[in-house]
Length: 194
Ligand code: TMP
Image 1 (cartoon, protein in one colour):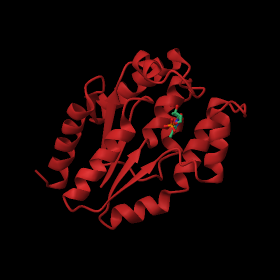
Image 2: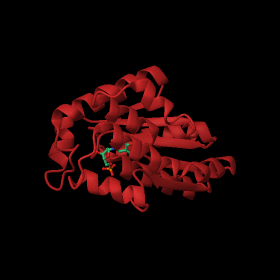
Image 3: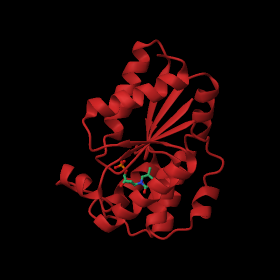
């Protein structure tokens, strides 16, 4: 089973994915957590430089880098999921759709270039307002995190995708504990735990 966590930066995706990993492990399940971008590869290093403003790629090249960075893990993801692992991804395909769409890229193209990446069984969208994202991280923001208008567009794209594709949409302005309960309940129902 492949479960993707999506949302703006500071929405709590990473915290929730880590907590879910622990709870599933405690329940005896084999589980693994991946984060995208994967900054550990040479493409990931290039993404980090671009986010820090050391490169001047256009939005299309940026998303091609993010997508290539996921393709680097394509075979491993397919093997892990086929082997019965529960794989949690902190950001996945929908991040390129949301951030790309918000920068005027074509949705069909963003979907097409990712069509050979395994499809998530469940996507969990933790929704916060752009103002909350900015408030929660006052320093060291990357080039996307500084742009409130862009974050508004990202949120609109995520909301559209969530409604059209039947994602689990959670209000991320609540406490971590409340969100974690909702996440666990949804996943437990799907993996046969209760
Ligand atoms: P991170 O803060 O989660 O490491 O992600 C870095 C930034 O890159 C974040 O602002 C979201 C953006 N991003 C995309 O635009 N497309 C993608 O596919 C991914 C994974 C991240």
